[in-house]
Image (cartoon, rainbow, N blue to C red; front, side, top):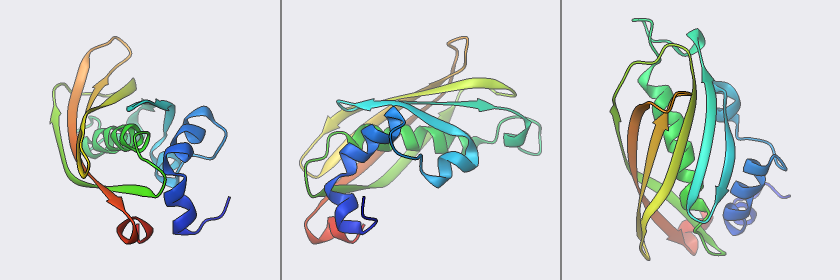
Length: 153
């Protein structure tokens, strides 16, 4: 697989599916933080991670940025599965509500595309712990890029 932007743009949805299936390597940020894609298809994606003291903020709980990262990744993969050949996307807004503290937990970020317009889409993500408790809820507005816009991404 070529690493040129054009090749990546033309295969973004397929790359998302291949990473989730384990057929392609995860992106560097996933390795750094420790999250992994579980599935990505049909406007939905699921990511998981083991949160522990490596991810704590100075107060001894999970840093909110980690929740943002796993949520953003899941939402991005969900949106990427809706892209056509030659399309890419960028996130133009990200919002998250932190609903309960986390120390050590197996986290699951489940994202789905709420609305996919021609240019703008809305994606939501629930992040839960291993007991099914809702830890955070995130939403993202994505802009679909085509043509020259997509090639520069």
